[in-house]
Image (tube, one colour):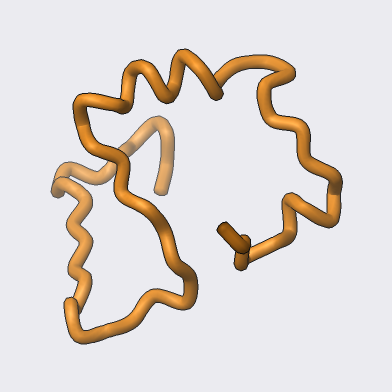
Amino acid sequence: MSKTNPPTDPFTFEYNYDEELPYTYNVLPLNDVVATLAKHAGANKVKLSPKDWLKTEYSR
């Protein structure tokens, strides 16, 4: 893809619902997004070690 000559067709994505993702995730209710971002987003808010950044599974 070129920055000076971007594609004219919109990007499409297809996900087959019978496929299983290799990880789990929690869906955040739409009404909570702004408050959650304000609480957790920004400089010096996420404090993870290099090892923690590579994790793909977390216990609750």
